[in-house]
Length: 578
Picture: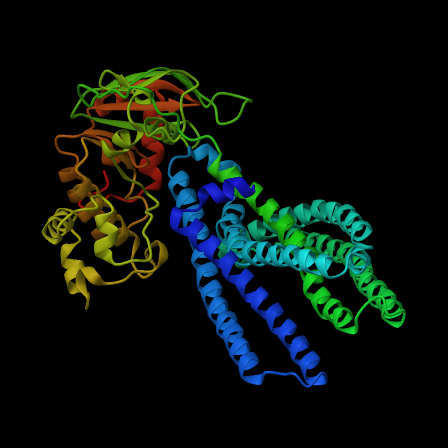
């Protein structure tokens, strides 16, 4: 782990870390030097040979060195800590965009949130706080040991007498504590996941007061986390208390034995006082090692969770990417299953010519949305192929594949930013004029202009404050701006009012011109003019053709869907019921 964290740091981060270690070392050594000067002054005063101006100059030099090194160490350690946090978070963000959607079905939102926030923040504590202090403390301890050994070897051995058994006890106890910390971290992730799910589901839970089962599940997760935390704390208390006792005992063994040496006149009093004072500095890293070790175990567990993201398999890129000759879409005997227990799609084959519109219809769970996900390589087929033009999507550069497809979904994702920046997602370097032009085509420009801040109006997360139709038209503006040759539509007029439906249909009609369009349709009236309609049932295509041809097949699945929809749905905007 240490090597991996070191390799993650930028050159500036490594330099800051080294400077902070050296600065903390200088800070500690200057403090030790001041103690030695104090002892020297006391000795000179007793012998009436003190040179105060000389000592004042030395003390002033030590104070300046101590203060300056402390400031430099504090600044540089934060530079190093922020560097590692930035690098790891940036790496995670880059990786998150390269995973298949299968990753997100296995990694829950709460767990990912815990990793990005709590676990990554723990890296800053290690690099910015633990490493500089720990390294500096041990360097100083080594220097003091060498100095004190030259002063009196017997006292040095007494000072070290109980360290080996203390360290062995600590290592054994903290190994067990490390396992408990891992269990506590996992129970915390489970609890956070459930809390996130609970908060997101509050509207539903309020609508169904008999939700005690979920409440108990949440309470059980909280109790589990509490029990793990309590067990870990109890074990740490026993281990660390005995360890601290052994360190203190080592100090008292040395001081007691030293008194006898002084009384036997085999050890000068000045040397004895030097050992008493400097031994506390020598023991400092060993008294702090308990907290350093526990932090190390926590960070090790956090680092393992971070690696679950940074080392998770991403979408496989081709060694030599190919570019399609055109933008037709072909599924050739495509097979796919989300789980190993059965295929969702079974030998699906169809062809959508370039610049044509193909609609996918069928009951929920029949496989329509899966078709769109496979085209986008959110998942890969497990048999057969999916092609754009003459090129398998798996042989295309993944970024180029996504650049060639615009998506307008029923559930619009907007970010807590300005309206302009939400539209700009379609094209990062778009000019203000291009954004306005896209908004006009999406029939949303007049609404945006009516707002006090226009395109600079901030919107809440997921478009809080906007109606469903307004969010849909912002999404359509984004697609206009992207201007991709392939367009994926998930029926987007199922939950909007008649006025917005008319505007959306006008915008979609313009957006679909001269593009290869694949529509996942829920309202059959909106796709009557499609060049091709594919009817899905239980993961297979059971009918294909134009609206009139399919409607004429009295016993066909499409006709049943049509008649069911006509009974349930009111006339579309601009239509009258027949």
